[in-house]
Image 1 (cartoon, rainbow, N blue to C red):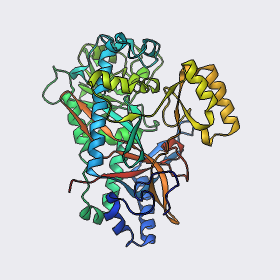
Image 2: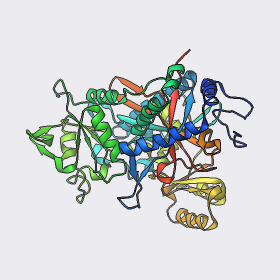
Image 3: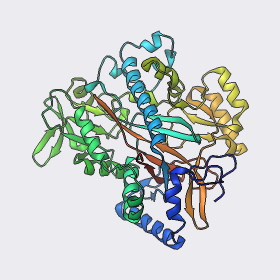
Image 4: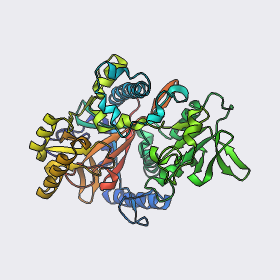
Length: 476
C-alpha cells in the first residue's frame, strides 16, 4: 500500500516500514488469504444487517435504512499514545463541566473577560431555565464524546466536543464484538484492552448521579424519540445492555411530583432518565408546546431535585462550535493548566476581520454551522464547486454568526480492505467518556470513523463514512 503523499499513515508511516503498533497485526495479515478476508468482510456486513445495526439518513425515506460500512482492518494505538490522549480528554471534560456550572451560576469566566458575554446571552443553546440550578452530583455532561483527529506521529487535535447526546457507542461495541467473532485468533496473540463492559459502567455511572433521596437501587430509563429516529438502534441496544427500560413520550407522566413510566404494574417512578431527545422537545410544558417527544412537567420534576437528566439540559452550549474556539481559554481558566490537547485554529465568522479572511480564502477552508452536526450544513472548500462556493458566500454574508471556519487538516489515514488490497482512507476518533460525581471513566479507544471514499475527508456516516474497531494495546 502506498500512503497518500503529504498525509501520515498510522500503519505505514511514510511508507518505508510498518509502525510498531501494527507489527504483530501486519505479520498476521500477510499470511492471510485475501479471498478469506473478503469473505469474512461480507459475512460481517450480513451479521450487522441481521442484528439490525442500521440507521436512517435525514431527508431520506423513513423506510430507507442503511448499514454503516464496517472495515475489518483495525485502527491500533499504543498504550503510551492512549495515555496521553486520556489525560487530555479528562482535562477537557473536567473543564467543560466546570464551565457549565459557572455560566449557569456566577459566570466568573465572563466577569474575567475571557469570553464575551454575547457568546452566552445570545446563544440558542444557553438555557435560562438552568440558571441557578445544580444537577444532582454537580454533573452536567454524564456522557461525552470528544472528536479527535491526528495529523502526525505525535499530533492529536480536538476537532469537536459532543456534550449533548453523543452517539456511536453501540457501533464501537458491535465493531469489537464482530472482530472477536470473526478473528478470534488475533485477540489470542495481540493484547488489546477490552471495552465490552461499557454498558455496565454506563449504568453504574448514571446510578451514581441519581438524586440524593433515591432508594438503594435507582431506576434508570432511556428516552428515545422512537423507532424512526436515526439512532434508534443505539437507544434500544443500550437500554437492553444496561438492563434499563426503553421509554417513549407516551410511556411517561408526572405522578406525585415524580416522573413515572407506564408498566404492567401501573406507573413507576424513574430516578435517572438517559434522554436521547433534544432540549427543546423534552418538555412541551416548558419548551416547545408542539413537542410529542417528551413529557409535560419533566423540567419541573428535575428542578425540584426528584430526577436526574443525562445529559443535563443546557449542556449543548459546551459543544457549540463558536464556544469551541474558546476552549483553550476555558481549559486554562478552570484547571489552571495549558490544554494537553490543542484545538484546531478557528475563525469566528461573527467577527468582521475573521469573516473577511474566510471569504477571501474560502477555497482552502472548512466552514461549519455553529450548531451543525452529522456533516450537514458544512463546506469543504478544496472539494467545493464554484456554485457551492457562491452559495456559501451568500450564506456567510447573510448570517455570519451562524458559522465558523477552520483550515483543511491533513487527517491521518489508516488502511481499509478493498478489492485491490489495502488502501489509505482518512479517519477520526470519538472516545466516549462517562462522568459521575467522583470519577471520570474513558473507554479505551472509542469509535473510529473512516471516509470510505478515496481522498474524501468526510467521515460522517450520514455522508457515506464507515467505522473501524479501535484497539488500544495493553502495556508490555
